[in-house]
Length: 338
Ligand code: PMP
Image (tube, rainbow, N blue to C red; front, side, top):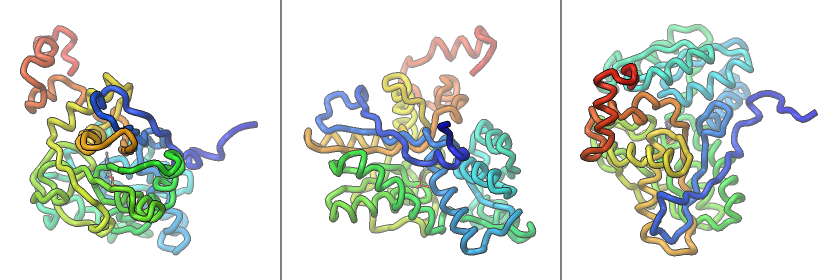
């Protein structure tokens, strides 16, 4: 018989796929690491597994305990998936900009979800960081993985994502491009690739315009899961050779092109990372191999990025683009479905 022991053993070993259409005119090879092939649908399954198993070993997470974490969804899915197999309860705290689709997914996996306002300072008692701290204190036998400071977040990438990329490219990777949220992916994967290539691999961070990593102040942007208004300790400030800032509009337009032209239905931070990867690849030659990591699937964003009405209401469509369709929806010609 051929079977996996549980969904947990499917974490990692995701495929690398060449981008063929959005790379028109570019000489370098651009490969996408498609992380939605993880069992929970995102790159965060990797860190969830490693953080939980490390906490079990250290005794911080006790049998029957409760996992409390502020998460924009993907980390929650990974934690919920691992937790249910191992008999833990989960409470997640999300900012209100996270799509209801994502929140319902967390609830579907059996987690409890608390939603907090986005438009408050991190120090505010209702900020999602503070609400989760309060829940940790009030809940008996609670453990907070804290992906922003947990060393097992970057370590999971040092030990899985990095070696996979080196092996999959046969050591020919020259540039690694990824979005920066907690900084775990870029720090762990980037450090491994630098170590194994003796500093040859260039590491590039993609960041939403307005976030601190590209020199902003934390001004709101709509791409989910990336950018910050503070400096997490999971982020190694020495790792990036370059940070590329990308606008919401460019991120979302590229996200839609990836679905239409490459068959990749992925999330908004993936479009953002690809925009950054192409800006880097444009300067390179035929021997260069750029790998861009695509963290999650587009299924969680159908009513946002993949809705013409939502895109148009934020000014993210070009002149004339999708106009007829938006008019149809507004006139309820197709049942008013956005
Ligand atoms: N994209 C999405 C959709 C995410 O959820 C995250 C994780 N917050 C990232 C990108 C960034 O990854 P990291 O936290 O490892 O920097």
